Image (cartoon, rainbow, N blue to C red):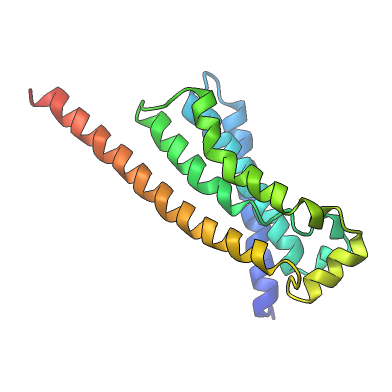
Length: 174
């Protein structure tokens, strides 16, 4: 009989495998569009994100303490990827220089946890066991940023879709 934790672990493993499989399929596709490329990198990010959560959730972080904390900025990648994918699919993309600015919060988050990442493995495990004691401000700020980012990027993506729908209607009903 499988208990709840084992069931959840199986979902994480299945998610990681399926995500990397889909990324592989996209990678092997001929004549990739920009949207395909964005989706490929997003799938790789999702796969890594799920794998890092699997390590923590399964308790294997004791085996790989150097990975503790790395997962913190990952939720910030999904909003920008959603927006950039939507922009690409609807032919509303900006230049790569402008598009890369969407990932600035991810970079800032990595910089903010840099001191934690430099801790010894034993110190990281101790902080983790104490629910992030000493890093509450960074954790809270990241959580608020993830929520705001998620909501903002969903709204921006919906606005792109609305604009695209309007453009399509204008093409056919003029």
